[in-house]
Length: 154
Image (cartoon, rainbow, N blue to C red; front, side):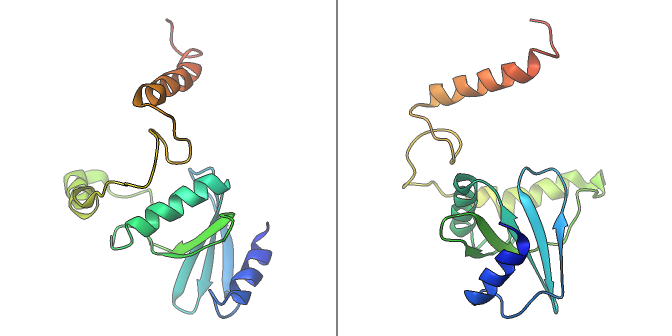
């Protein structure tokens, strides 16, 4: 699904009211496809990925919708092909001198507000749950071994 089709769908579903003044693909350290939509004074992100990944992210953003550290979910496409959320200004090229303050904000603003998820079944990643914690850990060891075997001697 291309971004022009998504924009038309968002207008049709009244998520946005007109064409963005600008849109561009964002690049970075993610396996998702990201687009920034700019409107008069507003910016939104459209994120595309596998439906199970998008569904997990939509549930997470809904679950923690009161956090001011996370973007606000505006729309999740019915079959979870993509989500739309508010854009948060920032950069990965930040001044790392005040890491203590940054970690304090993260702990107070997000980690201290952790909520257990009673409706999810299984262990591990939300989009790839397994039956037991031990199975999850073994899967992680196997995946890590694939990466490390080519770099580290046994």
